[in-house]
Image 1: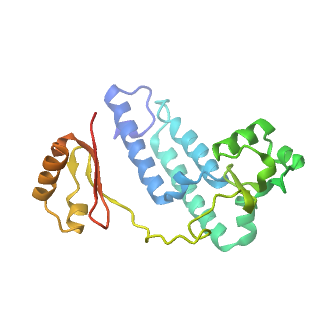
Image 2 (image 1 turned 45 degrees about the vertical axis):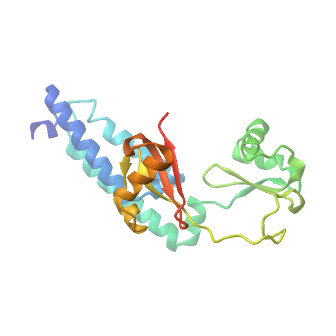
Image 3 (image 1 turned 90 degrees about the vertical axis):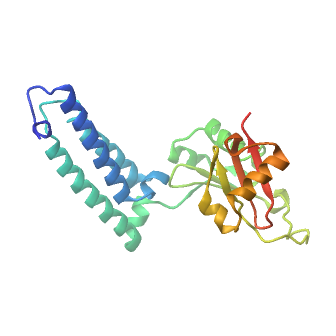
Length: 234
């Protein structure tokens, strides 16, 4: 365990052991913090990511520093992070500090220039984000908001929105998400068994309909009506 403490020099094996321990410790820490820290990089999450990365980087590049101090520091930071998340759920003023209310950037088809300066973005950036949502005319937008995570959500006037089946009174079937039964040449037996089909049935179906084997399939799905859709490697 000499590699765990500060040394004048470390061997290649000791550097590797430090990296392995740090990697799994970070993996475990991220698991404790939850997927929120991965999917939503808010103010609290960003602060944690920067701080933890800085803390663990030093002992991985400086043999004179031990891992013990960094791991203790990271443990304390994780506890503070979890406490911060708990407070944001239970204490509304703290939640508003961490996740402030959305800021309107466009209102009634007009750009709110004061709020653009407030969130420190340019008109070019705003137009770029709107193009990603297939919005070409600002005057079609009833409201566009700057969200706490740095994204922009926009809402068109009703007359510019795409009509839905409900609007034109067309009956629709219930939504059903197809199940993946083959992925990258391998059968997912758990999903296949949900439909009470066998591997032999699947192989025969592929052979007769697509002239293919399991290893030739990059993706195959099946829906609630037992419709099989197959995508082959090219």
